[in-house]
Length: 256
Ligand code: PEP
Image (cartoon, rainbow, N blue to C red; front, top):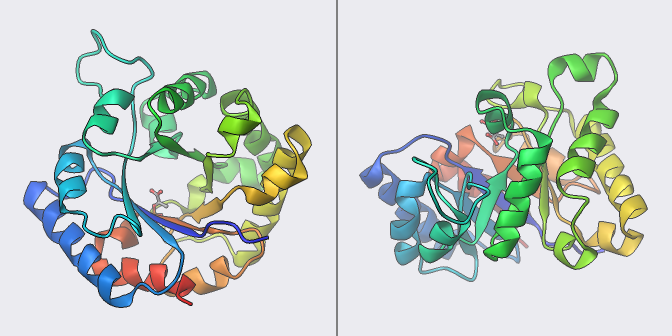
Protein backbone atom coordinates (compact mmCIF):
# COMPACT_ATOMS: atom_id res chain seq x y z
CA UNK A 1 0.00 0.00 0.00
CA UNK A 2 1.57 3.28 -0.96
CA UNK A 3 0.50 5.97 1.45
CA UNK A 4 1.44 9.62 1.21
CA UNK A 5 4.78 10.23 2.94
CA UNK A 6 4.82 13.49 4.86
CA UNK A 7 7.41 15.49 6.77
CA UNK A 8 5.83 18.33 8.74
CA UNK A 9 7.67 20.95 10.78
CA UNK A 10 6.21 22.52 13.90
CA UNK A 11 7.95 25.82 14.60
CA UNK A 12 5.98 26.25 17.86
CA UNK A 13 6.28 29.80 19.32
CA UNK A 14 9.66 30.49 17.74
CA UNK A 15 11.04 32.94 15.18
CA UNK A 16 10.10 36.57 14.77
CA UNK A 17 8.80 37.79 11.41
CA UNK A 18 12.15 38.20 9.60
CA UNK A 19 13.62 35.02 11.03
CA UNK A 20 10.58 33.08 9.81
CA UNK A 21 10.99 34.48 6.31
CA UNK A 22 14.70 33.62 6.27
CA UNK A 23 14.16 30.05 7.41
CA UNK A 24 11.30 29.49 4.98
CA UNK A 25 13.36 30.92 2.08
CA UNK A 26 16.17 28.51 2.91
CA UNK A 27 13.72 25.63 3.00
CA UNK A 28 12.15 26.48 -0.38
CA UNK A 29 15.58 26.82 -2.00
CA UNK A 30 16.77 23.53 -0.54
CA UNK A 31 13.59 21.80 -1.67
CA UNK A 32 14.22 23.00 -5.23
CA UNK A 33 17.80 21.73 -5.08
CA UNK A 34 17.40 18.53 -3.11
CA UNK A 35 13.82 17.22 -2.95
CA UNK A 36 13.60 14.16 -5.19
CA UNK A 37 10.46 12.16 -4.65
CA UNK A 38 6.77 12.37 -3.85
CA UNK A 39 7.03 13.22 -0.17
CA UNK A 40 4.90 16.13 0.97
CA UNK A 41 6.47 18.80 3.14
CA UNK A 42 4.50 20.97 5.55
CA UNK A 43 5.54 23.90 7.72
CA UNK A 44 3.24 24.69 10.67
CA UNK A 45 4.19 28.22 11.63
CA UNK A 46 2.92 30.81 14.12
CA UNK A 47 -0.09 32.75 12.81
CA UNK A 48 1.93 35.93 12.14
CA UNK A 49 3.93 34.13 9.45
CA UNK A 50 1.21 32.36 7.51
CA UNK A 51 0.32 35.05 4.95
CA UNK A 52 3.93 35.93 4.15
CA UNK A 53 5.05 32.31 3.89
CA UNK A 54 2.20 31.48 1.57
CA UNK A 55 3.19 34.37 -0.72
CA UNK A 56 6.85 33.31 -0.64
CA UNK A 57 6.05 29.70 -1.38
CA UNK A 58 7.06 29.03 -4.96
CA UNK A 59 7.19 25.23 -4.54
CA UNK A 60 3.53 24.70 -3.69
CA UNK A 61 3.48 21.29 -5.35
CA UNK A 62 5.90 20.06 -2.67
CA UNK A 63 5.31 22.36 0.29
CA UNK A 64 2.22 23.46 2.18
CA UNK A 65 1.80 25.90 5.04
CA UNK A 66 -0.26 25.22 8.13
CA UNK A 67 -1.24 26.68 11.49
CA UNK A 68 -0.63 25.19 14.93
CA UNK A 69 -4.09 25.77 16.38
CA UNK A 70 -7.49 27.19 15.55
CA UNK A 71 -10.54 28.22 17.54
CA UNK A 72 -13.59 26.00 17.28
CA UNK A 73 -15.95 28.90 16.46
CA UNK A 74 -16.02 30.55 13.04
CA UNK A 75 -15.94 34.14 14.29
CA UNK A 76 -17.05 36.26 17.22
CA UNK A 77 -16.09 37.54 20.65
CA UNK A 78 -13.08 35.31 21.35
CA UNK A 79 -10.37 37.85 22.02
CA UNK A 80 -6.95 36.66 20.97
CA UNK A 81 -8.13 33.61 19.07
CA UNK A 82 -7.89 32.71 15.35
CA UNK A 83 -10.56 30.95 13.29
CA UNK A 84 -10.34 28.40 10.53
CA UNK A 85 -11.62 30.90 7.97
CA UNK A 86 -8.90 33.37 8.97
CA UNK A 87 -6.23 30.68 8.51
CA UNK A 88 -7.71 29.74 5.16
CA UNK A 89 -7.82 33.40 4.07
CA UNK A 90 -4.01 33.70 4.31
CA UNK A 91 -3.38 30.47 2.43
CA UNK A 92 -3.14 27.95 5.28
CA UNK A 93 -3.90 24.40 4.15
CA UNK A 94 -3.23 22.41 7.33
CA UNK A 95 -3.78 22.81 11.04
CA UNK A 96 -2.28 20.96 13.98
CA UNK A 97 -4.97 19.90 16.43
CA UNK A 98 -4.41 18.18 19.77
CA UNK A 99 -0.70 18.83 20.20
CA UNK A 100 0.24 17.76 23.72
CA UNK A 101 1.36 21.29 24.58
CA UNK A 102 -2.15 22.53 23.76
CA UNK A 103 -3.70 19.67 25.73
CA UNK A 104 -1.60 20.29 28.82
CA UNK A 105 -0.93 24.07 28.93
CA UNK A 106 -4.23 25.21 27.45
CA UNK A 107 -6.43 22.46 28.88
CA UNK A 108 -7.78 21.34 25.53
CA UNK A 109 -9.91 18.28 26.21
CA UNK A 110 -10.86 15.54 23.76
CA UNK A 111 -14.31 17.19 23.50
CA UNK A 112 -12.90 20.62 22.62
CA UNK A 113 -10.57 18.97 20.11
CA UNK A 114 -13.53 17.27 18.42
CA UNK A 115 -15.05 20.73 17.90
CA UNK A 116 -11.77 22.01 16.51
CA UNK A 117 -11.61 19.10 14.08
CA UNK A 118 -15.11 19.99 12.87
CA UNK A 119 -14.08 23.64 12.49
CA UNK A 120 -11.10 22.58 10.37
CA UNK A 121 -13.42 20.64 8.05
CA UNK A 122 -15.87 23.54 7.77
CA UNK A 123 -13.01 25.63 6.41
CA UNK A 124 -11.40 22.96 4.24
CA UNK A 125 -8.25 22.74 6.32
CA UNK A 126 -6.55 19.37 6.68
CA UNK A 127 -6.19 18.45 10.35
CA UNK A 128 -2.94 16.95 11.56
CA UNK A 129 -4.42 15.34 14.63
CA UNK A 130 -1.92 14.60 17.41
CA UNK A 131 -2.27 11.88 19.99
CA UNK A 132 0.18 10.57 22.56
CA UNK A 133 0.62 9.13 26.01
CA UNK A 134 2.49 10.54 28.99
CA UNK A 135 5.47 8.83 30.61
CA UNK A 136 3.22 7.54 33.42
CA UNK A 137 0.72 6.11 30.96
CA UNK A 138 3.48 4.31 29.09
CA UNK A 139 4.93 2.94 32.30
CA UNK A 140 1.61 1.75 33.73
CA UNK A 141 0.70 0.11 30.42
CA UNK A 142 -2.48 2.15 29.82
CA UNK A 143 -1.15 3.80 26.67
CA UNK A 144 -3.15 1.79 24.15
CA UNK A 145 -6.39 2.69 25.94
CA UNK A 146 -5.40 6.36 26.18
CA UNK A 147 -4.59 6.58 22.47
CA UNK A 148 -7.81 4.81 21.52
CA UNK A 149 -9.87 7.19 23.67
CA UNK A 150 -8.15 10.20 22.09
CA UNK A 151 -9.18 8.93 18.66
CA UNK A 152 -12.68 7.86 19.69
CA UNK A 153 -13.51 11.11 21.43
CA UNK A 154 -12.07 13.58 18.93
CA UNK A 155 -12.03 12.15 15.40
CA UNK A 156 -14.14 8.99 15.21
CA UNK A 157 -17.37 10.98 14.85
CA UNK A 158 -16.20 11.90 11.33
CA UNK A 159 -17.72 10.24 8.29
CA UNK A 160 -15.30 8.01 6.39
CA UNK A 161 -15.29 10.59 3.60
CA UNK A 162 -13.94 13.22 6.01
CA UNK A 163 -11.74 10.86 8.00
CA UNK A 164 -9.77 9.89 4.92
CA UNK A 165 -8.43 13.47 4.80
CA UNK A 166 -7.08 13.41 8.36
CA UNK A 167 -3.36 13.03 9.05
CA UNK A 168 -2.59 11.39 12.40
CA UNK A 169 0.58 12.20 14.36
CA UNK A 170 1.63 9.86 17.15
CA UNK A 171 3.68 11.91 19.57
CA UNK A 172 4.56 10.26 22.87
CA UNK A 173 4.56 13.16 25.33
CA UNK A 174 7.70 11.81 27.01
CA UNK A 175 9.60 12.16 23.73
CA UNK A 176 8.56 15.71 22.76
CA UNK A 177 11.42 18.16 23.13
CA UNK A 178 13.18 15.85 25.58
CA UNK A 179 15.81 14.29 23.32
CA UNK A 180 14.26 10.91 24.18
CA UNK A 181 12.92 9.15 21.11
CA UNK A 182 10.64 6.16 20.91
CA UNK A 183 12.64 3.29 19.46
CA UNK A 184 11.60 2.31 15.93
CA UNK A 185 10.04 -0.85 17.44
CA UNK A 186 8.09 1.09 20.10
CA UNK A 187 6.82 3.55 17.49
CA UNK A 188 5.94 0.80 15.01
CA UNK A 189 3.98 -1.08 17.68
CA UNK A 190 1.84 1.97 18.34
CA UNK A 191 1.41 2.95 14.69
CA UNK A 192 0.23 -0.57 13.85
CA UNK A 193 -2.18 -0.38 16.78
CA UNK A 194 -3.56 2.99 15.62
CA UNK A 195 -4.09 1.56 12.15
CA UNK A 196 -5.88 -1.46 13.62
CA UNK A 197 -8.22 0.76 15.64
CA UNK A 198 -8.99 2.83 12.54
CA UNK A 199 -9.66 -0.37 10.55
CA UNK A 200 -12.09 -1.58 13.24
CA UNK A 201 -13.95 1.72 13.21
CA UNK A 202 -13.95 2.37 9.46
CA UNK A 203 -12.37 -0.25 7.17
CA UNK A 204 -9.03 -1.84 6.48
CA UNK A 205 -8.89 -0.03 3.17
CA UNK A 206 -9.36 3.35 4.81
CA UNK A 207 -6.89 2.52 7.59
CA UNK A 208 -4.32 1.55 4.97
CA UNK A 209 -4.71 4.88 3.22
CA UNK A 210 -4.16 7.13 6.28
CA UNK A 211 -0.74 8.70 6.84
CA UNK A 212 0.42 8.27 10.44
CA UNK A 213 3.41 10.43 11.39
CA UNK A 214 5.79 9.93 14.29
CA UNK A 215 6.79 12.92 16.41
CA UNK A 216 9.11 13.24 19.39
CA UNK A 217 12.76 14.27 19.14
CA UNK A 218 12.97 13.11 15.55
CA UNK A 219 16.25 14.26 13.95
CA UNK A 220 18.45 13.51 10.93
CA UNK A 221 20.17 10.70 12.82
CA UNK A 222 17.11 8.72 13.87
CA UNK A 223 14.64 9.59 11.08
CA UNK A 224 15.78 6.89 8.70
CA UNK A 225 15.26 3.98 11.08
CA UNK A 226 11.90 5.36 12.23
CA UNK A 227 10.63 6.03 8.70
CA UNK A 228 11.71 2.53 7.63
CA UNK A 229 8.96 1.01 9.80
CA UNK A 230 5.99 -0.38 7.92
CA UNK A 231 3.33 1.80 9.56
CA UNK A 232 5.29 5.05 9.92
CA UNK A 233 4.57 7.44 7.07
CA UNK A 234 6.74 10.37 8.05
CA UNK A 235 7.36 12.72 10.92
CA UNK A 236 6.16 15.74 12.82
CA UNK A 237 9.34 17.58 13.63
CA UNK A 238 9.70 20.22 16.36
CA UNK A 239 13.22 21.35 17.29
CA UNK A 240 14.91 20.00 14.16
CA UNK A 241 12.49 21.90 11.90
CA UNK A 242 14.06 25.18 13.02
CA UNK A 243 17.31 24.33 11.23
CA UNK A 244 16.91 24.17 7.46
CA UNK A 245 19.76 21.67 7.03
CA UNK A 246 18.39 19.26 9.62
CA UNK A 247 14.83 19.60 8.34
CA UNK A 248 15.89 18.92 4.76
CA UNK A 249 17.99 15.95 5.78
CA UNK A 250 14.86 14.48 7.35
CA UNK A 251 12.80 15.27 4.22
CA UNK A 252 15.49 13.60 2.10
CA UNK A 253 15.04 10.26 3.88
CA UNK A 254 12.17 9.82 1.41
CA UNK A 255 14.14 10.93 -1.67
CA UNK A 256 13.84 8.39 -4.44
C1 PEP B 1 6.52 18.54 18.32
O1 PEP B 1 6.42 19.55 18.97
O2 PEP B 1 5.55 18.18 17.63
C2 PEP B 1 7.75 17.75 18.41
C3 PEP B 1 7.75 16.53 17.95
O3 PEP B 1 8.83 18.34 18.99
P1 PEP B 1 10.35 17.79 19.04
O4 PEP B 1 10.67 17.26 17.66
O5 PEP B 1 11.18 18.99 19.39
O6 PEP B 1 10.38 16.71 20.07
